[in-house]
Image (cartoon, rainbow, N blue to C red; front, side, top):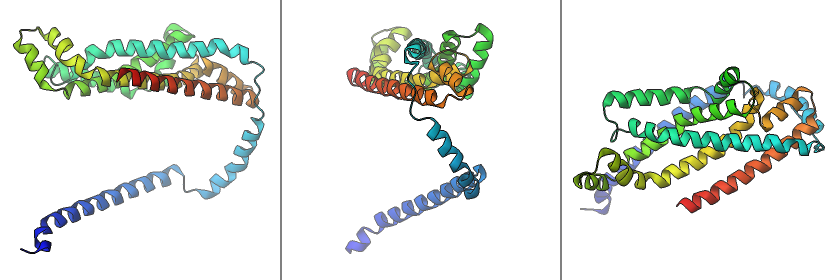
Length: 267
């Protein structure tokens, strides 16, 4: 048998895989181009007309005005507290929901589908809409921001927790069952130790996201630095707006660095 004949099946498989990739890429490129055209990204005239206005707005934002820096300390603490409290509540609520929403730990298929549907519903409502609802329910301040971030985060965190639980090694689980452990003991001794690193990563990533989202919560009256930002925008104090954005950037950088440190500690 010749070398070419020996490798012919492998070459044909590679050729078919490459052809499938090209077809898939072409379809995706057409879809993306169509969406960009529909959104107006190819409207060069409109983009060119908006460039001078954007340049003028950016020029009005400099130099940044930090004269009210002392007044932003409290809102920054509110923003940080909202993100931490919202994430903590979400993690606590997500663990039991994830157990019920995982195929290998859910007590019944009906419970599995109900929990999955509930989590899908939470993810489908943006945290900004939840913020408006909770502001109307409990009033202004950090509390509606915490509730909005917590309930929206449950939908995503519980989903990741459930998927991690579904991919655990079944051997420790079967060993715990063979030793006569109760279902709760099986979960906490056979499953949780395996998924704890993934759960910790998910919780930290969600905290980083919630800190950014909490700045938006302030724009609907849920307190925090976002409330100061929208106030400056309304009175067109663009130099103050740029200063607030710089402060937010520094805080986001700090949260990202601290989150990376926490992830290394949980490995």
